[in-house]
Length: 349
View 1: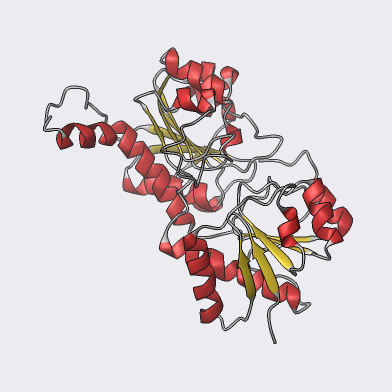
View 2: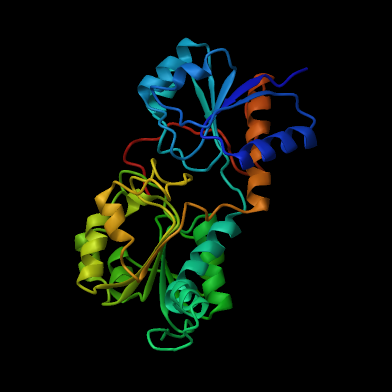
């Protein structure tokens, strides 16, 4: 029995490689079609004739796209990521379209990347690499600080935020505090305290964002919250670009209220992330300005990008599609539900 057909959008060579390997390893017989363009209104017709579509973080699965998919008889959207803020869940529920995701894929990968950004900014690794490549071994401009004892605030203590907190607490002996509406007994047992968002902003040397993008978390870093922070604060974002109001971040960098920023995401990253624009340039003036600061590191939404993570992503995605095709529904990933449920718009952090 075949597992059905799937149109895979926003596809890169590594996606094709890992999907085909996962299908062979799991002995699942899919008919794949790999499309490089994003899934959006102008490309949705490519999905006609398939049983399911597979999308990633920047595909635009809005009401119009979901309506078109439904008209083609497609009742399954599988996300090869955890976030689903780019999917109109109300329209999907209205039309009976199932949306499944990968709730966990090597959360260590993203947590480790967040810490890598902290260390790279602190010890000015990009500048050191550039200088020594040109024979400049001067230490002028390379001064950093000890991580031990620094207060680090974790916003969002799900799998990724929790691992980041433990790395910093146990590995670097930082004074780690956290904010989340759901407290983790495991983190509290490690000596990590939950504090108010206001206290976290006022007292932390480093902030690391690990919250989902919801109406309640959009622009949680803004002009007002930045004004409360310690001068020279470091801000790390490996979650979703919309958590930060970018112009406010730039203003904070210009007036030195923010001393460092490490970003793996950007609020309008769709045209840029995962693409080679080295010869085309960037036409987003805000994004271009952000990358001119020497104390800012922007990486290409690559925090998740490890061999282990891609293996889990591809296998879970195919299991989701296979389960739906067989009428059993997408299976759970361990203890985690892979089916995205419609939640009230006033969802909590």
